Image (cartoon, rainbow, N blue to C red):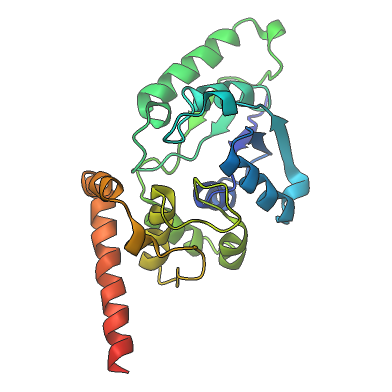
Length: 240
């Protein structure tokens, strides 16, 4: 049986870029019930691809922790995705450190899905084997956006519809680490970031978030380069 590509789509910048690169057969959006997920769902309704997206109601709000992590979330989502296709795509990046976005997790999920599939009469998806693909795992958000642009992705659509924010507000807050990481990617791809956030992410980054960014070599390099580019833009503006 032919492979079927199914993508976990959050509506964030990474998954929006992945649509262009992967071109999945099935696009899954999980309605998790959290405040930020509700805003992502609102954005999804506005997207041109909305009619192609399969929305799965799966309320996990009860288990959301204070730092917005839902334990085992991607394990649950990946196992459910196995009912829609055998080639599963997850948006993991070089800056992600949660266990459900690393290569050990990938191996464990593949093992479970392929073990279950031994009893082919007890699984929905018959294509085999199952693979959890993380095509962006070795890339920073800036590199992902650069690839999207090279692949002639719809940049205007990405800027209009994608959402990368932990807040439950209509406008991306500019204060959470997710907003900072998105802003860095925009700056390094020469895109004016200032209109997308309620607050300037570079002026409102918390000390703890900055320390986390600087502790991760790839993200630290991008963060410092973004700061340098912003300074250059300001200096050029002052000279004019």
